[in-house]
Amino acid sequence: MGNGLAFARALIVLLALAAVLPAAHARRGSEHAAAVQVRELPGEARDVLTRIHAGGPFGYERDGVVFGNREHSLPGRPRGYYHEYTVPTRGERTRGARRIVCGGPRAQPEVCYYTDDHYQSFRRILE
Image (cartoon, rainbow, N blue to C red; front, side, top):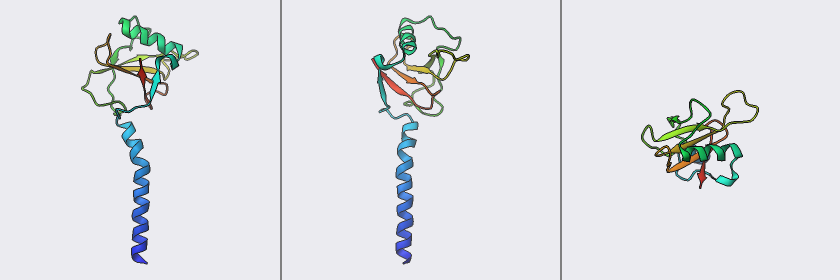
C-alpha cells in the first residue's frame, strides 16, 4: 500500500506541473505567441501601427519609450529593442490598457505585438 500511495502522490505532482509549465512558458516570451491580422485590430490600433511605420506623430508623450519586457512576456532581446505605443481607448481618461509594442528599428520594426490588457497577454501582429 505504501508504494501505491507514493506513486499516486508522484502522479499528482506530475499532473500539477504539466498544467503549470505551459502557462509559465507562454509568459516567458514564447516565439509562438498568438497572432492577429492587422485587419482584425481595432481601428485605433491600425492607426497607431500606420504612425509607427511613418515615424509619428504620436498622441502620447510616452509613445516610443523603451519597453523593458521585465515579465519576459515577449521573446528575449537586448534592452532597447522593444518600444511601446499607446492605442487610444474611447471614453478612457488615462492612457488605458491597449498598447502596441514593436521590436527593432523604430520606423521599420521587425515585429509588433498588440495587447489590450496592459501587458498581461500579447498577440503578434501579422502584417
